[in-house]
Length: 260
Ligand code: OOG
Ligand code: MG
Image (cartoon, rainbow, N blue to C red; front, top):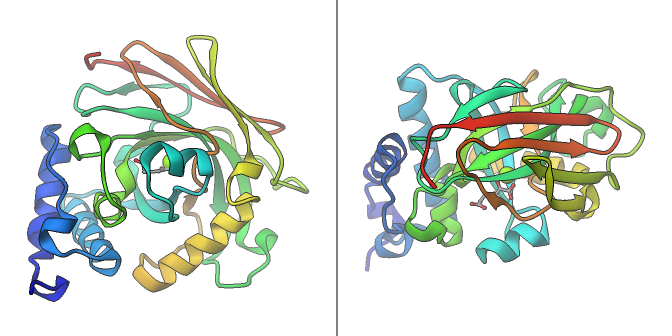
């Protein structure tokens, strides 16, 4: 029997890395190679190590699948942790070249700025210095945007690009703020931060637990994306995208390049 101990995790990371770099979808890997959740996080670490080895710098982490809308969209029902690097951050109001992506989708997010390395049980306002509206572009490296739980973990939770809007002081509550995603001035998704594990502060707690078990060690000054409150929508070239979180303002970008 093949166990994850026998698997060439670095080899799987190399395949996912190459798929992202060349914009070429690949078949799912986990089942064929006996990769479970623990091994999948090791593949993700190896993937990120390849990228930091090329000069990318970690700037934060992201939660995925923290809302029912997202879980239903991809058929995986467990929150997951991925990693964000500097080269994947698009300035607010900037342009995003999506020509190298496979089948990008965009989703509205809420971001936390970590004031210190959060530990289990630390009060939210001790751990978080500021909050902001954000947008995430996801792009599964797997054909047809279809994957199992270990597959999406190994693929760094489909992370591709992200934009954070202006940081705001932490409001009294972040658990019931309206969320809006607009493309070319049309509303394409609406929701509430309540959809994020009932309260996005729980996403931070879940992320702390996952980072504790699988890495990376969270750092002061890092960005933490809590996971989308709504389903993601396909991203076309020439699209003006805005994500708004009630009381926090808007994050926006415009896409260039890419094909429909
Ligand atoms: C997995 C990533 C999910 C979120 O916010 O839920 C995610 C996917 O949907 O491909 O980033
Ligand atoms: Mg997301």
